[in-house]
Length: 366
Image 1: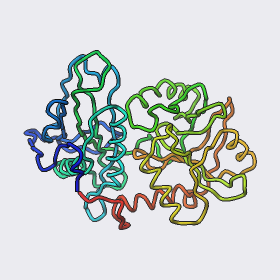
Image 2: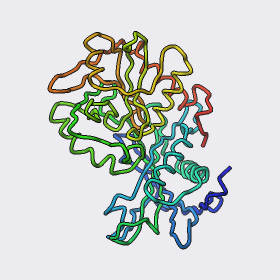
Image 3: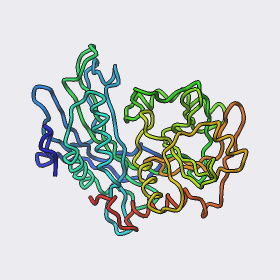
Image 4: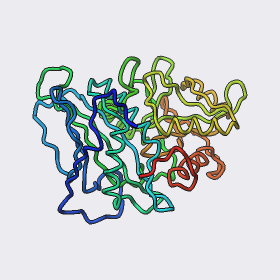
């Protein structure tokens, strides 16, 4: 049931306009370039509130040149996937967590509140309509990109009086060119992804666009991604656009899976949360949210206490780390046999849930 206390659009008012020229379905190649036939749009104004949701043919947006989303970055987005299971049924993975995170980002961006359940039902209807785009594969999926932007037509910096919430979908394969290989990371404290009191815990475009310069410098150092550090003690925060995990024997001699805490500079990833909940349920080793820094990591590597490191996220799921370039030195991150790695076990358990091989309350049937 939706929250009736929030003035919101209603899925029951959804209007559907079908495309007159359906696309020819293509083989999935790359990430985020093949879009479906339809999109969802919902307009809002301060004077009239939310308008009826509309599913319409996929088209370009028309924006005023002074649109404050373009000038001041008053915008946010989400990312989740649709999986076609072995039973041919379509599933979303913990989508209400995405809706909740989107609502949190909207509050931070001074964009209007909405009923999360109503938005999810509108998205379900969109997926249902374009379900033929969901790949028949357990290595590909359909990516959903809810987006929320200010459409304020003014160069003044102010709380928006107009906004557009829209959802587009595209077929996706592997996020990295070769996900079988471990990723290389460049760690340099001169660049900071997020800071205390900022918006690092929200899914806003500026958090991503602002990282490109460092990303390309990482490539110059022979690395694929940036290991984002924070503070004078070089705290480990995120890897590229991923949350980061360290599987090691800690300073007290305990086997531990650790990831940085949600202190305002870490994005609360849905995959991150699922890994924590899953491994805590196993009860086989210590699972903690704790601060990690490069000094502790280097000491652990010297003492052969590191088992593995890996990133997590919706786009890549699980991505092992192979080495880190830090202070001009290449730090080798150990790799166990693929079948013995903790990350491989986690990835299998999560994908079995996503594709319906393991029954779970974490999935949402379309």
